[in-house]
Image 1 (cartoon, rainbow, N blue to C red):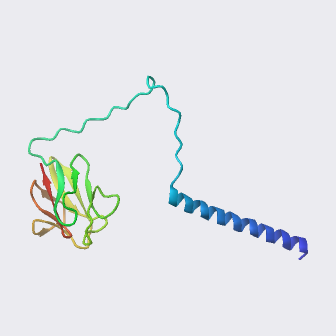
Image 2: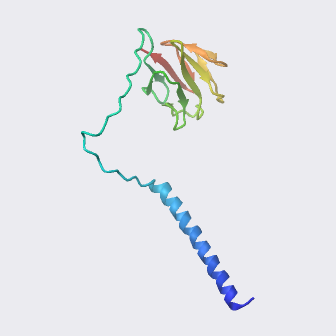
Image 3: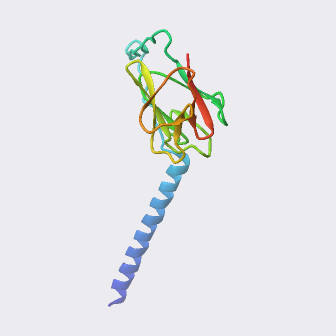
Length: 158
């Protein structure tokens, strides 16, 4: 090979190497600082339409309003009960995040169905208990009934 060919190959390799380094730095910067968000110019207030926020459905008398941790490391934490299921666990995506070493990342779920709340274990290692009974299928939970997840106990309260 001629000197010119080797020099071109070396420069091409050097260019590819620098592209790799710059893309790695870009990814690290994005992970550390997040993406840059630009704000659009604000329109005059008279032209901006505010979206209508739907009202939450009315609860029937006697229905529980929230799931509250009553015993364990996360005492006092609560999640409001609505129309959507509530995932319980240690994971960041859980609606009721419990800091307990015996709780799985996605441990259990509380689901509304026909005016009643049901707890279902999501294949956790240590299981979910309603009272003293281990849950193997969706099980109805009423207000004041203790639900044990790891070393944490929670109840549905009005």
